[in-house]
Amino acid sequence: MKDTPTGKPSLLSKAFNLPLLTIQRLAWVDYLKGIAIVLVVYRHVLIGIQRSVANAQAHGSDIADVPAYLERANMIFFSFRMPLFFILSGIFISGSLAKRSLRQVLGIKFENLMYPYFIWVFLQVTLQIVLGANTNSNRSLIDYTYIFYQPRALDQFWYLPALFNTTAIYLLVKTYLKPPAWGQLLIGAALYFLSPLVHNISMIADWMEFYIFFALGDAISTFFFSDKAQRFLSNPYSLLLITPIFFLTQVWYLAHPTEPGKADFLAIALIGCLSMFILSFRMQSWNILSFLRIIGYHSLYIYVTHVFIAGLSRLAFTKFLHIHNPFVLLLSGIFFGITIPIIFYNLLVVDGPLWFLFSYHKHKRQPRTTTGKVSFQS
Image 1 (cartoon, rainbow, N blue to C red):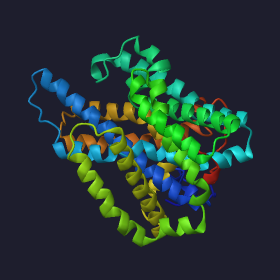
Image 2: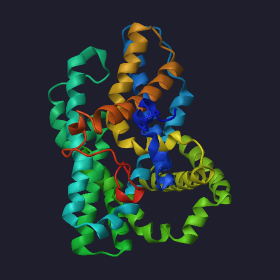
Image 3: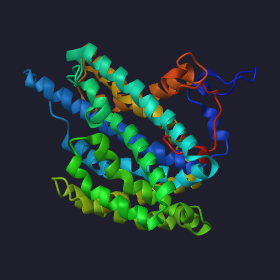
Image 4: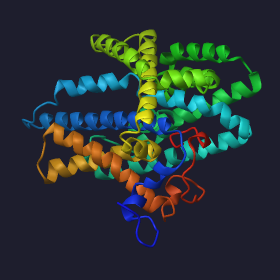
């Protein structure tokens, strides 16, 4: 839809922030985040449907189980979704530190990650308690305490404190201890393999587990933007080469129903991440599926709100429309879980009355280049 005759953007253009497609950005970053956040939404919508089916069956309903192949697809995506975000953040962290002081970078990170974490996790837990039996969560007042030490128990929200804590600790080590890149990778490897020892405190275990991916992103950042690396990532033959390797590792992953060892998972995750990087560069070269760029740019807002929105969608379909088909529930949950957060943010948050839900500073609508930020947003 074109802009109005007055030159102002149309409602559709504003709702989805379509002008960002015309701004000079690193499109591959938005593609990469778009792919990753769609896979994240897929996982959480599927889990919600599975829990709903289990609850219904426990009360005597004859609703059929969710097809097994949907769960297998979820397992494939699980192996590399979140490491992608940590590697991507690590790639840009040195650039941010070169332009700002340590205190400024940490302040920006806190506002971008921890502020929305506290706001939205409180809102979601409160709504789940109020709605009670109409949700799959079974929340109680004790869940508020999990905000500070066990975010893994609070649906999708664990990622935000995990990325903030990883970034903060990595920057403190980088600034004051000044280890070489390989030193940071050794620290990350040690933390990665030790993380299961503190799994009962996910506020600690999560950043320990993903520190290595963040360190890897920073370690490759200089080489990553070299002409040689960019040509490799953009080369169509690179995609042809990595694709069979990706599928073979995923076949092996699916052949082991129990969780693989930490070393196995690390190798599978890194191959998956490299595959997604190459795919994102090819999509940038082809200039296709631009909606993924829109989704990627808004990935933070999708991440913090999609579980509740997808839950409402599932509730509407099952309780009011009496539709229990898993494909309908899955597709509708993904669609609404992605589009409504984007519309909500662009119409009611940025330049709107609800700006305080994502930041304690009111920001004007101003699409930025990808090099300006290293969290979900670019």
